[in-house]
Image (cartoon, rainbow, N blue to C red; front, side, top):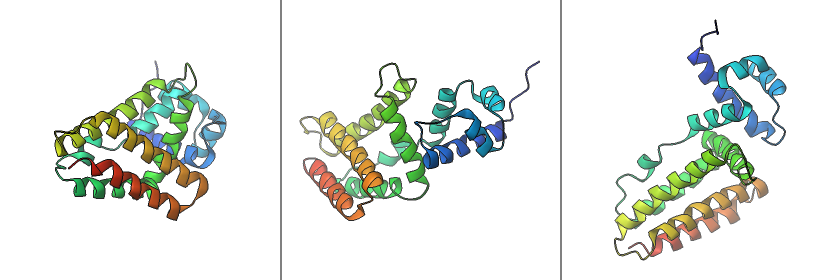
Length: 189
């Protein structure tokens, strides 16, 4: 009879997976070193998650913020600009930065044809673009193409966050972020 899952231990492992990948990267992820870091065995990781890829997707899903709540109730461009600037700050510092570093690696891996992360990456992008599109359309019902503006804003922010992690140039990237937000939201009045 299979061993029942300890859900508290599973949640603890998922949190550790995110921390490990943020520190060691996704490219060379191997179950044995990961299991050692987590204080378990590769056999137990398979028991809890099935495959390495399923484990990573499960870990990422525990980190996904409530995107609808992030944009809920925004009726004014100034509030949207403020919320986006706050989101940028969270995703470049602290706990949000850890999960974002992992997410960026997964999005990169999803670019490979047949990637096991393709579905997760598509969903992660679509959730953000949909929420931003709805917000821009709500702020300015006459906006000519809120979906294109949302795509530009979300993709631009993602690129700037990646730029920040690669270069560490906080001043330049923050200035660029402020300009991106100002220009993207400028037309939503």
